Length: 217
Image 1 (spheres, rainbow, N blue to C red):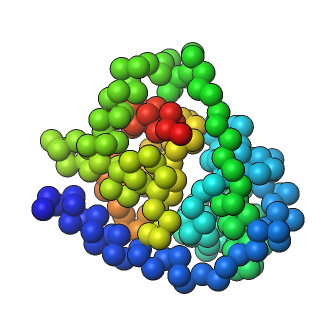
Image 2 (cartoon, one colour):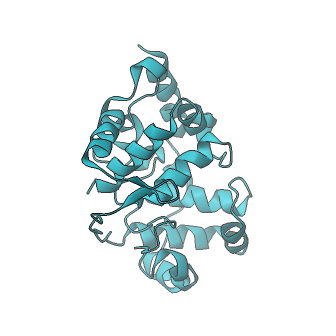
């Protein structure tokens, strides 16, 4: 067993009961509370702004954890912390249930899409192919594990372990998220798992795997 495999078994075991600790949310109640979220994430969680995450169909346990972490200032973002601070535990359950039960709308990728517009790095077939290898097999030379271990071969995540669904997210959001972990700007990952992984990834790997994930449907 490799070091990365053992690391993931420990992390998965520690997260295995994350969803059982929360009461069930009410979808109808969540819908009535979600109006404030629409400006960034879309009325039904299908954000059209590339920098904001798409919440529709996201794993409920992950949404609960993230909102709870924003409320407790364990995850830093001024807008989200301000919003979450006013939420009760039931509000968090209801909102998470609502967005988790919405259907994710498939967004067709643009032919002239860029991973990084400032550096003018275009999304190419070669870049996507490189990302596919990293997502499915990892990088043994640098001990970067395959993303499938936690997020599944289709990017659907693992609800029981609290791992998020990645497929359908926009490239800018994915790149920012990975870089935030890499630079310790996001620190609410269990056991520092994502921070450990991303510190071993090159910028090119972050770009390529983000491009590949964004194409998963």
